[in-house]
Length: 334
Image (cartoon, rainbow, N blue to C red; front, side, top):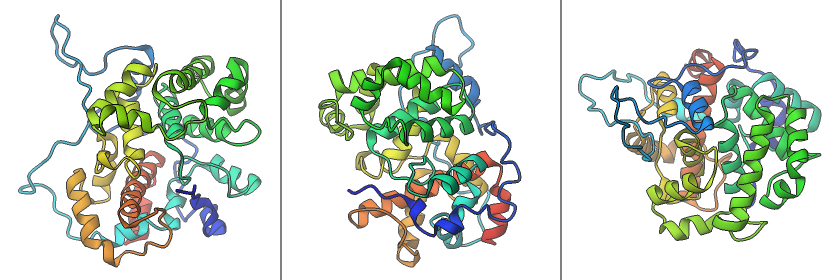
């Protein structure tokens, strides 16, 4: 599938901040996670600590490598959405939603460098790029710094988008890119990205230009649990939070992962009065699919396009939540 960048659609509208959308855009910290403390989890994962044990016992709890899926809840007694979700879904799938998800520095980048640059918020990335993003966003840094690191690494003059490019850059080249991003934990992140490149080239990929990671799927028999085990075992710095980020984003192409909603995103969906359970959200999307404008959704066929739409809904819901723009988005939808 050819790479599609949503930045090229209605560029003028997308790089203009929507009214009230950036009320908290200067904040570089993530909002607290509903039901989990992401900063602690991310920090523990980066240092190699077991983040799955919450049992107050001297005996170490069994490590759980299962994805952090949202527990299924009965619809009885729960908060009901009196509104038809069609308007919410349509807005999240439109370029206008990006105004509520992007930070000011990303908007400035798009204005100064053009809308063809790769961004985490709106570009269709390769599986390898998504895996690198998951490693970066697993570091104990703010979401804003993570996004800036991704933009700096993936675009000129560095263009570190393949295992070969990351390896050839060397520790010094990777560190220089992260220095330019003005992020934190630069040396540690540079080392982990180098390790990622080595692992893909030598163990879990098919050469230094492999960005599809199909070997992982083949060895796992397209079983998500086994895929997660392979990735976690081989990639230093990638824990359960990073795996959740990766599988949330990759499910358009790795169809065995569909549908998946991680805990962090479930809270953001709930704030928009959308189902937080993956199966229920898929049912709503399927029900409303024929009525949705699908012009701006990438995909080689109808099913892939639908999975891409699912991801877009998740990413823009959680992006607005992290930006503190959910209430403004709801007002716009209404």
